[in-house]
Image 1 (spheres, helix red, strand yellow):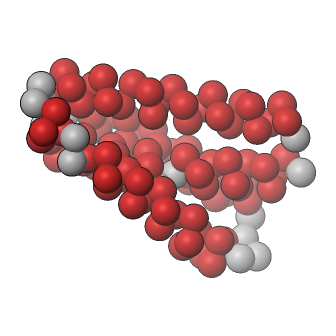
Image 2 (tube, rainbow, N blue to C red; image 1 turned 60 degrees about the horizontal axis):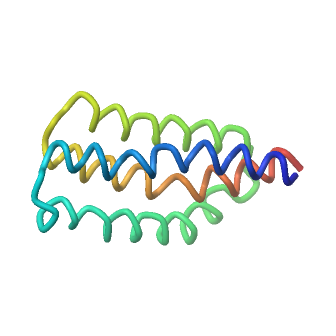
Length: 110
């Protein structure tokens, strides 16, 4: 389980690390792109409350896959669409999935 937890951590720490750098390249003013990070945190908090209710009795592997796809979509959006809306979308999709990836992944690994 520790090995799996580490692998899931590496899987989300890379997008979470590079997302701010990508946002800064798109919008150099931190007063503007900085507003995406509260959304990142709110999405993370909301995912911890909503996903367990939605996933009750569901397949943790499918939830993990959907969360991974959502995170990838968020990173792809900011990589190909250089706009504040892409930064906001990426913040919500990455923030809203990184804890889900760990939760569902640990259930599947167990």
